[in-house]
Structures are given as C-alpha cells and as structure tokens.
Image 1 (cartoon, helix red, strand yellow):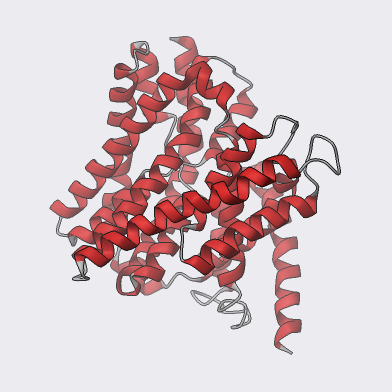
Image 2 (cartoon, one colour; image 1 turned 180 degrees about the vertical axis):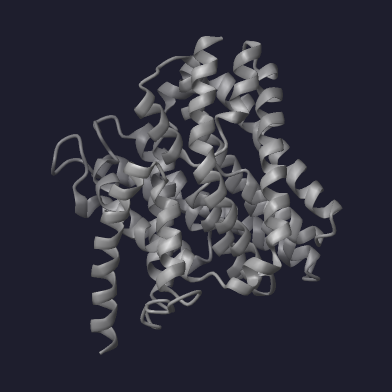
Length: 387
C-alpha cells in the first residue's frame, strides 16, 4: 500500500509542478518558490497529505541525486575558453564576493547574538548564487556584453568557492560544537580532498569513454550513470557529493575534446529530481521553526544583500571594471536557490541540533531572494548597458 501511495504522490507532484511552471511564467514568480510553497501546503507544515514514507527515507535518495546533478552541471560551466577570455575578472570578483559575503553575514549574525558556529554556517550559505535564475534573466533579455558574460561566469565559479568555504565552515562549526578540534579538522580536509579526488577518478575516464555511442554527446544512460556514481560513491565514502559532482563535470568539459554537448542529457532529466527536492524542502519545514527564526531570516536577508553590494563593488574595482559595472555587479548576483538549500540539508545532517533552524532560514531566504533577485538582475543588466 505504501509503495502505491508514493507512486501516486510522485505522479500528482509531477503534474502539479508542470502546472506551477506555467503559472509561474504567467505571474512572473520563480517556479522554485512555488514548488517550496507547494511542499509546505501538501506536507506536514499544513495539510500533511504526503505519505510518511515519501517524506522519510526516500528523501535520502533523490536529494543527493538532484544536488549532484546541479553540481555536475555547475562544473560544466567552468570551461577553459570562458575562463581564458574573462578569467582574471571572474576570479577576482568571485573570490571577493564570496569572502565579503561570508565575513559580513557571519560577523553580523554573531553580533546580534547567534552562536559563532551557527553564524559561520549561515555565512557559508550566503556565498551561493542561483545560476539558473541568472541564466533565465539573461536569456529573456538577450543582452550580450562583458557585464553579462562576467555575471554568468561568476555565478558558476562563486558557487565552487562557496562549496569550498562551506566545507571549511562545517569544520569550524564542528570545532565550536565542542568536538575534538583535530578530528573535526581531519574530517573536513578528508571530505574536501576526497571529493576532489573522487570527482577526478570518475571524470577522467568518463571524459574519454562517454560520447562514443552517440558521437559528440553522452547518452542518457551514460549521463545518469555518472551522476549516480558520483553521488553514491561520495555518500559511501562520506565525501561531499556536491564537490564530487562539480569536479567531475569540470573535468569532463575540459578534458573531453570529442564532446560537443556533454551535459545535454543531464539537463533534460534534471528537472524531475529538482522538482521533488524543492517540494520536499518545503514539506520539511515546521511552522514553529519559522516563527522562532523570523528575526534571523530578516537579519540574514539584509546582511546578504548588503554583502552582495559591497562585495560586487569591491571586486569590480579590484578587477578594473568601469564604475557603473562595479556598482551593478552585486545587484545582479542577488538570486539564491538550490545550492544554498542543499548546503543547509548537509549541515542539518551533520548538526541535528541546529539543522531545523538552518533549513528554515535557507528556505525562507531563498523564497525572498528568488522573488526579488531576478528583478534586481534585470535592473543591473539594463543599467550596466545604459552606463
């Protein structure tokens, strides 16, 4: 009976997600926000219609799978041609943006009374941007200039820096949680280094072997096989599946010379997994947690917005961009989505005591930035072009 209920729930959610996607395009509300709200509506926070087995162990399968797909595609944007053309500007701005985001958010939250470990974890979350929302805005506007190219490059690479910083934040939070400092440090180094090594170990042979059956493009089976290998082996060895997927994707796009569209098949099947992931993120919320952390959400949103503006301006000036582009860079990088929620889920598993609060802040802030962020990105692109 439970299996049939799960299958029925998945079928209904897929169809509801399709309808919400259409509604979102009409009312100009991001589908990520609508899916999170759908999860809260049909899940335990409100109506509690979802099968309990669906909201339990099954989430341990599709959440890592969906996030590994995101990381895999994210790594695929780090191709050598883009980095060579705009490498210096992208690297300087992205590093500055991540550093300022973590410093401003973590320090600000600590100053209002949050435990230092919790504040640092939220600082790590703040570094993540939403590449999908940024790409959507760019595609809708059809503007192509240096500012837009930099934005697309930054949202790809700053999530890579963000994942590295977040891994360090997990280590620091472990030390602050009265765990043995040496053990926490070793665990953090092992998680990051192991993820990179595993991503290379899967990505290097995949770069040569895939795309042979269907010349120039891996088949669907090949693409899914890589994602499942990355997420499964990373979970088995207790490595970061986000970093593993990213390193694997970056390796393939830079090594596989015979590939024309190495990530096309993953892009086609990513959405069903992401749909379930965002619905379950909404279903995992608790209304009591949202009320308790309301002031933290407000402080986080304000601090992250401030940090984006400062970091974008400072990074742009250090990279030698014109004044107007420097001022607009942070404004164009406001959206926040899947990677931040994924980080919160990873942290909640590591630190159950603060996990629910972390997830509540991540989801609430994602809704806020997904509603406002794309409009700010549009404004930034228009003003940079006009200036």
